[in-house]
Length: 438
Ligand SMILES: Nc1ncnc2c1ncn2[C@@H]1O[C@H](COP(=O)(O)OP(=O)(O)OP(=O)(O)O)[C@@H](O)[C@H]1O
Ligand SMILES: [Mg+2]
Image (cartoon, rainbow, N blue to C red; front, side):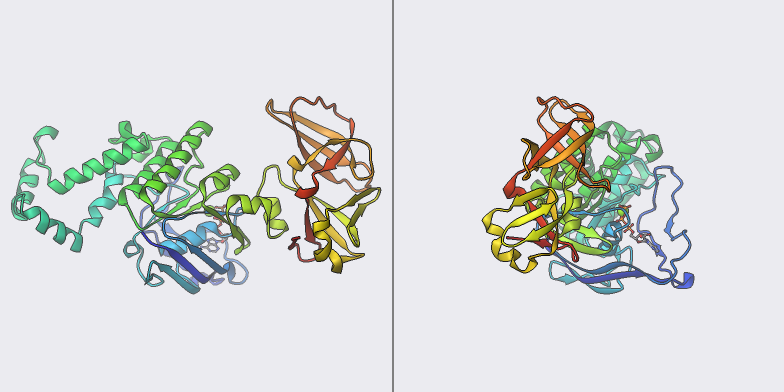
């Protein structure tokens, strides 16, 4: 196991077709539609000038850590994983696994297993062989020499083993000769298949599986290899809700057991918040913040993170600040807790962006310190109720989301006064979007 250090990493895709990096994919792909190309070629029209997809990424993942990578579609998550796996060249920077600089190593020498967004299974191999493949390949070379010298004390010489395998190949299964190494591979495959509940599919081809089953096979193949690093690109996106929750828990448990350093890409809020030791939030090729899930939720570094983490997202209201502690959004007038006074001195008379999460608004009494809103949508989920409301005092539509307990009946069109939980208020610099922290 090892720590992974990503240092000043840049990745651009060249604008000119002939310079386009065309990387043979280490493993042939099988896509959800079974029409996968064997080579990852950008088939879209080339960008007008070199597209900068990763811009100075710095990320250190501790030995055994589970790092979740989140960000909107197209922000560069898969590209970052592919660069780490060696499937794309770096444009700049360094990647270390433990004390090895792996920039120029071919993918199979990196001791990294990647689970692709689109599974990437061998279409012509059974599930069993897909999982066993990496294990068989690992056994070649030095490792095999070592294990052979160990094993040779208690088993046949290699030539005799090969002869037995060859001559018994056409016999019924029970009579075929299996090498000790293949036996141990068999055990590992069965163990992984059991963990992921795919034992009954071991003899099928990938095209005979559902999307969710394929995804579990792809996970199984990575787990079986027992690499130094797991890279997982939205591995649960094709599973139904129940299986997804189960597999999520299994992956976390497995990762803890194996202690394998993991980078896990997801779109899913629940996955991000529950699986990761830490989360790295990315936007437009840059890391916005790296922190524990609760730190991100409680102390987002900027407006982007504040909006991205949390569902439904944080509400934002532009306000005027008057020193020492008053924010207004006529006729709303609110006095901030004293803790804000020192940091806000320099903002006297300026505009700020107030951030408040849906769960930190509640139904209050008529008062200028509360926000007068009109209810536009009520979503009663049973255990809680979401409201979409509109601030009534502004001409331009300004919508807020509110989460309230389920026992308070609310009618469409009803006017409510919303009170803010004072110590849950966030403020952002309106120009830079950076959080202002007391
Ligand atoms: N080979 C390529 N040539 C040119 N541009 C590319 C290439 N591969 C990816 N890109 C661009 O790089 C950006 C990042 O793509 P990437 O696949 O890393 O996004 P992502 O964060 O994984 O998105 P998603 O969540 O949708 O999977 C996108 O704008 C994409 O169009
Ligand atoms: Mg992706």
